[in-house]
Length: 114
Image 1 (cartoon, helix red, strand yellow):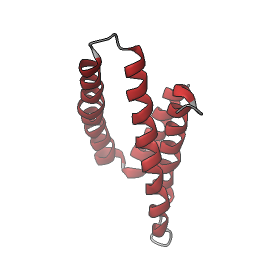
Image 2 (cartoon, one colour; image 1 turned 180 degrees about the vertical axis):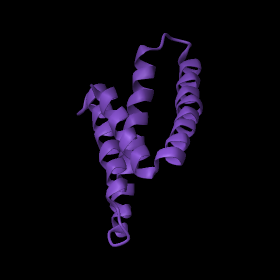
Image 3 (cartoon, rainbow, N blue to C red; image 1 turned 90 degrees about the horizontal axis):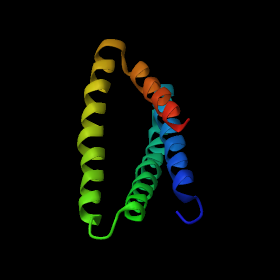
Image 4 (spheres, helix red, strand yellow; image 1 turned 120 degrees about the horizontal axis):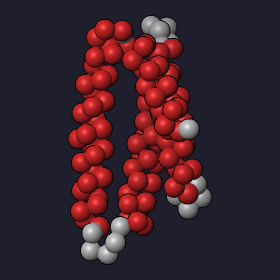
């Protein structure tokens, strides 16, 4: 985090996410073994983003509010974010297929990076 900084860590996490998720759409029955390499990117995606978010929340939080802000961060990410993502992703997968859903996730992630 000291090397990348907050923005660099978030950017590297998003790029890792986009490569991983787009890679899912390229897999075939002959290339399915590449899932292991793609899944290793999940560790980078989640760990780097979570460390950056927790550190930034700690940095901007007034004294005495650290637990509250960490709880709000966790609730927004794990409850709201994952809940909305599961609902919208499930809808997209049901009606448009998995390739559309994963590539749509890449497009949304790239818009957030801008």
